[in-house]
Length: 196
Image (cartoon, rainbow, N blue to C red; front, side, top):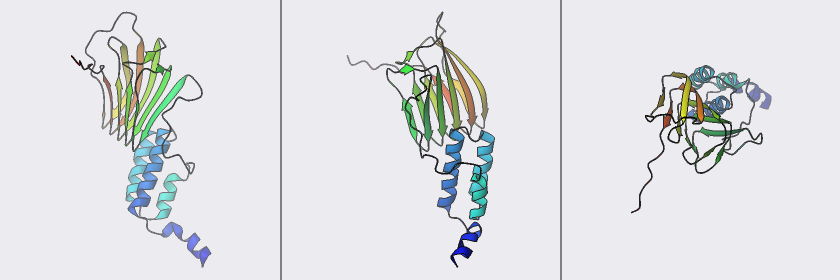
């Protein structure tokens, strides 16, 4: 009897919670670069319309099991890069911190805030890989830096709200965007509050 039940699990109908667990797993895989934006959108749509466990299993058969719920927003051990990842959550990097040469910001049903206004830009060129899927990535930069945005947005936006001139010899921040149903926005520094 037990063998019959195990063999027949793929025909059992799934609950909304099971569908959401698979969508979350797919989001984590996309945030780690295991799925492209198109693959994620296609599989997430199929997960929401799945009826049986077998249908859900086919959507994740080529992905490792036990992906972490959320990647840490701490510097990687390589020294030259850092990751800030928000999956169904909000993550931020603020304050006076040394900015690595390469930074990954990924928001999947979440919100990433990268504040560079008080940070130490240590390199002539800082590269940010910004991915937003049903989420947002906001990069706040110091006055006068040279920001260059490239990439694509599908049913979303990539926008720079900077209006001031670029200072001569200013650091360059290259932001490569991949957006689907989300946004990547570059903003000027926050205005300082005066207490007098």
